Length: 596
Ligand SMILES: Nc1ncnc2c1ncn2[C@@H]1O[C@H](COP(=O)(O)OP(=O)(O)OP(=O)(O)O)[C@@H](O)[C@H]1O
Image (cartoon, rainbow, N blue to C red):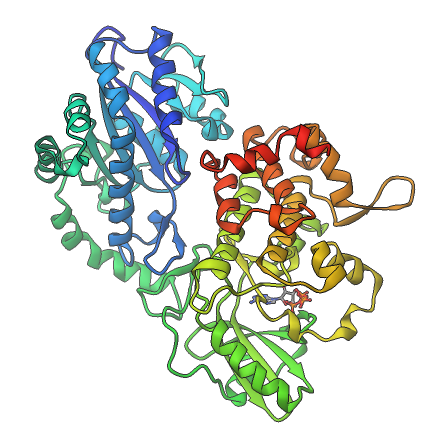
């Protein structure tokens, strides 16, 4: 391990999947500089971003380790490059300040999973003297302290840097190396001024072409240690010498990996996006010419609608699990006794919905109409509904980061329906936990959108169902039947409240009386008493700032006046902590407003 007085590497490790603001990165560097005990002249800060999810060109999240060699190498490269450039531009000011201290900054983004393994490998690879872990990484602190030999510090929620272990240790385990993809780029300290003075974008300045050249000609793009992955017996020490150019790597490694992967992922063509990395299922990529399925096809897939295949009965009708001959797993929703007029409406509705393809939307694969039957065929989502995960006795407690990802993913699904989809706005009309299905990667998928009106009235007869449904209805909808995208926003706010609190929409208040979640939660949020709000089952395992953001988003969404509710685009930004441009929302959240 390098002595503190010889030039060394100080790694600042981030989860690059989460978006960061400039101030967050620069304040972290400032805090480290101000401490005085971490950085010395000659040191290099490596701003390490770990990308554990990438967005496939089709819009689905994939884990880079599981498939990047086969299907989405371009997606990984693009996203890594984008992140590197983004971090570089965010750190220009910091690099200038650090230059005065003789410290340089390099940005490195590595795509891989699990995050802790990537960080560990990167630290070992550069023989770091320090690792400064971002606050979002603290849940694995025990792992880092056990495995990392260098000094360890953590960035607190306040963005101050606290030292956790001020000394190095030899008492660490050996690690098994994995294959990751990474790209690094130095942050030019002097570019900033000239660029600023010229008021030109970085890419137009002469200095930027140097940076580009460095990136292209130096061995910064690495596919590392692939021997261990492909069982070729390479040792971890080969990592630095095994550097390859981008082009070499693509050509030499991809074919071998493809062979491996094809066995693992069934059913769909090999470049279809992955739906669940644990089940190994893929999703459909294209809207087919024909969306109709024959009755016999569905009959065969569902084992003649057998009891064993029955997933449940919903408002629309019975739902059966099935599998087509090509391996595509489906959920077939069967509606009996539809009228002719309903058939016509049904066709036009299904046509619109068939264009709604997004990673957080359950895909409608097609339909079948036979005599008095309407059957909708959806892709099968493998890991039950959010309702089950929050409230079923057999379900393990959803961790906070899972809840956060579910909230953000669902918000993005709704944003897509409202604003981005062909035929939009599509109003979901029935957003609630039972209509949010999960994969084993905890990717949320909204189902049943636009179809609420197809549900029969008869299923609203039992008490819990009425309460359950009413609990998500915006006042203007329940009272005057006015439906808009803002009624979806209200319902989503209720889902957020449930994610934070783990409570049912109507619960007993302890004195045997029913109490609505909204009535219970609102005054607590007004007092910002987050510890009272949070699901007790989580113990201390949550990020206070993220809970605050989710509570804030929920509070804004469930405003009685629809015009006071944010759009789903704004909700996503609030949840992701990027609401700086939405001061009007921040103002709404001020306690004095809330007590009106
Ligand atoms: N695409 C799907 N993949 C896997 N399971 C599904 C899918 N769609 C529905 N299910 C399951 O089938 C059952 C019935 O679903 P359905 O959506 O019809 O009813 P619900 O959500 O319980 O009520 P409602 O129809 O009123 O929303 C539920 O257990 C649901 O989780």
